[in-house]
Length: 142
Image (cartoon, rainbow, N blue to C red; front, top):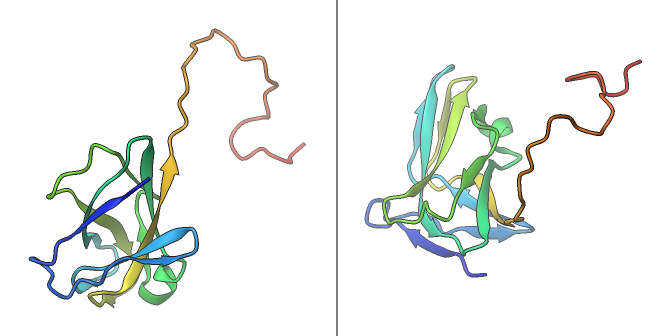
């Protein structure tokens, strides 16, 4: 598969290109971001993508992002579908700050990978054949 990436260098002339490290590709901030505790921000990552048919993109923070900048991604991980593919469909990282922080431009804060779709069907049933485990948070309890 081929992932097409458009760098918005007309808006961010110094935008760093994505970097491959292992199974995920690192993405940098397009501009400096300053946040106060409790603030929410959509961090602009300065790229748009066209994902190949049969795939979707998973976007998550890098493991060092919280340690360095005290921000957490608010939607656990981002899903980018194949129909989010226009020039104006810029990838954003939704974060919540737990402390005062400034994230410089071109700082690697997120990473992504392509995930292959797994086709499936839905069958609506009246009951399921498996045993009940006891509800949420009950694994390993008697």
